[in-house]
Length: 263
Image (cartoon, rainbow, N blue to C red; front, side, top):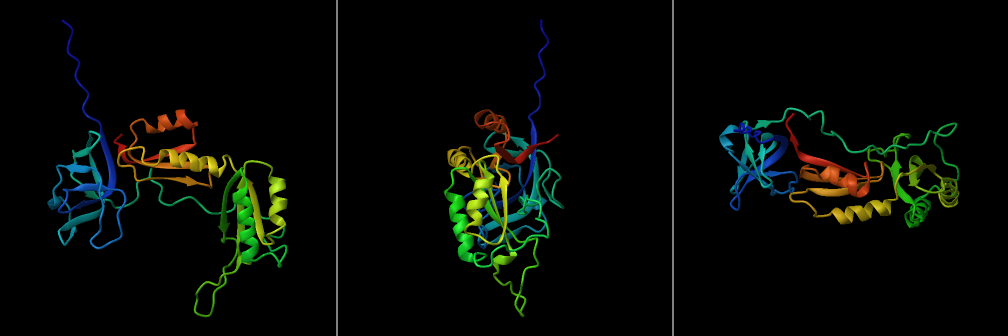
């Protein structure tokens, strides 16, 4: 008689959330919270939860919630069942990005530094014309403004002064950069960085539209024009990244999971 194989224990997952309970539902894990008071949000249920385990939870008008709570438990596709007491997060885990993508310029500064080359077109109208040109091109990768190379002017009260001569206009394309730079220079006289994009923005937007609402409890999908990728925010990556790599190619869609497997 063959020995019976011992089943593997359920896999544990962990993540950090706002946990909220109201009159309509029990404790739920929220990745996105509406800015109201009391807050509003919804997400998967969390089983085994007790508010007695959390110091400093707030309760207003029948809504009880706590922010920055790290939970660990098993996941059945709809509910997280706690296997450890919840804890308040003290810092950002190393594998979670602390900030969004950078908005700098990928170009090396020109000799003498970033500067205006034509004051007559280093204006709001000139920048708008450049942006209109860029967005109309089928190989347009993205457009953004970098203010970091300049000290930004302020008025006597310390309020910032709107001054496009103190900005670097960044535009990326997948195609002929020299042709695009010449066209942009014809309408924009301020600092300009034209760089190579790996993928066209319109192709990334099409992927974004395809993925919208595709997975349960997903908190969003968006385009990152700086590295030519689509970010897909899901609750658990149960093979989704592999599916995205097969469908669109490796590195095109980056999957970010709110719950991560416990190593």
